[in-house]
Length: 422
Image (cartoon, rainbow, N blue to C red; front, side, top):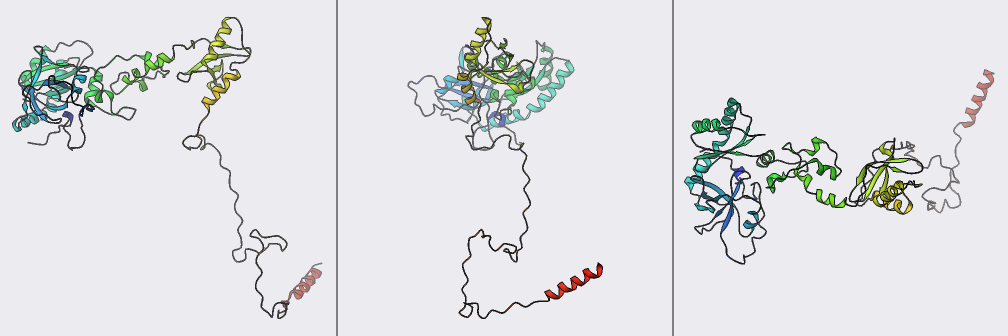
């Protein structure tokens, strides 16, 4: 049998780490339970599908082992992803599937025959998904089949589909059952759940939250972006699923608590000289930014929230202050706005500064660097040490007189030429 990629099941090609989605770190693994309750383990299937089963046969199970569990009908093959005390905490977050009000059972460790049949079923999933999409297109149904998952015994398949409204797929189930000769189960998922099943990297540079730890999806509205003073740009606010990012809800409560005592920002501030309009806010810093009416954002003024309340109170009483920011508030705002070079970085505008042209250096005579230097001018290196003179040269004796190399004759010849020209 050809090689089957079981990465989406959580079976990595290497023994280092784990490639399964919604992986949980067992931080209670080294803690012994205070009481012995029911032995419940978490079993992972394809992508983000998990369920919880009871170890009725008291098998010695380890994380990462393949087990045969109870299906509906038949049996399924899954991987043990978690066991111990942390399982009961995870059961509060995930929906547990019960059979007649009881936990479903773990039958045995997976045998080689079970694993071979399981891999055969995995190899049929992609081809089944392509054919089912063609059938949906022929039936003209307003739905999209996003994924197909076969059961471990190859007797049943789950078709995950996305649809905006209700879809009558009774005819579709008949056609699929006749085509593939298996039991059909249709399961509707949302756009966020589809993104979690596919996985990917978000704009933050990390794996998507819906494929790593999120299991409950809460509706996200644009009010969360307004509370956090985020620009309402749909391209930046939308995630890979096409919906608003789930992370917009992570910090919105902290922003709402910080804005409880903030004054309204739609009211302009009036002074004796001009009127100021609101532009933006630093919520955690407690500062409103205003600009004179009719001018651009280049003339921003940082006004603390306390000072904004004072000016609004004066305006309501019919008074206008002389200045928008007084000294006791101005000093605090300046401290917050200054740039602190903590890491030793240079200024951000260092590339905008024009460099001065360096003057070319004068070429010096390599043979005699002291040529042209005056006798009275001191050298930069200080006075040179006197050379040792021989005994014969101590009083200037023994020196040869300089010979005249025809300098006077040249002068006379030049004078004669000048007379002839005149």
